[in-house]
Length: 420
Image (cartoon, rainbow, N blue to C red):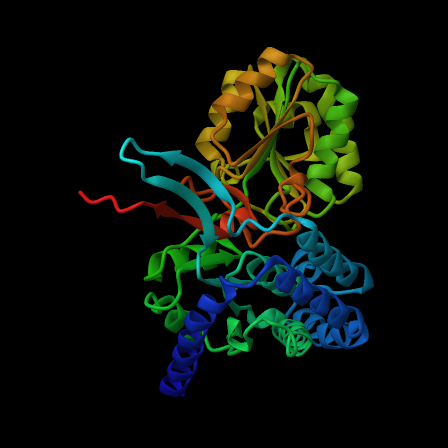
């Protein structure tokens, strides 16, 4: 079994490597035509996709998966419409391939261009959310890359159905059929096999829980762009509009708690804690949030908050649980975020520009907000169409990874007979 699986995956990635060369030569018109076909394919098969998704939902409920995980799995008419909209937005965004980043001429007359080019073959390993299948195919296609998809077993039927619909839709397009690959096996060994294909795969992007991402980072022979977890903070300053702060904090926690850009820790300035905490706590509790607070928080909220442990501060709950700490000033809030955060997304609520500027410069995260919910850290919300993932690394890509982050560059040099 393992040998047959290995041969099958190796053959697929070899074909994808060859197909990537053809992908790099596609025009914007050809790529947008393929995206149109994908859109029509999804729109014509909504009932089929929902039906296949129900198999995954039933299996998840049988396994007693958390409500947050079941929510991540769900495909309904609204979410399928969202998949379609992401592809439409990807069509509209400027094709990055061939963009001249910089042009300069040397004293010897050599004319040098720095030009954006596809990375090649992108491997995406992901859990739960089946919309990732269509989002990532669309982004890789528009950026001229071949793509290899390895979804999680919990979304097996959904991912397979989406892939089939898209593959069928692209049959008569100019996209090489080998450029879009799905590793449909639920055998865990398939991930290990894929991670060893450094001769054929240029980049791996893992999307999922911390366990998956750490496993991929530790075992991959291929460069990995990653974020381990999303420990996102909102700091409510003593200079904040407290009504705005409450709206932002509630949205950041409860709008969709099972995603990486949801708030996991709320920091509140001591000067407004007694006024702010009871009101925001009542609304959070109405939404089913369990509050775990430091001594000051528990003293103010009494039975409405449980005492927090040290392990709560770096925790990514992905659930209706919130850690709360009262801090003395902005410097202490920044120190807490840089100590316990995951460099994902963090926000300050304040009316003071100087304080906001300090927070923006000092917080070492990929996305830093002033007076807005962290829930906006998303390729679609940033106007990128979609994303293949969110990077908290500092090299190559940071934050939502979309078309531009799926390219690298080369130098094109034009001469007139120069020799050295």
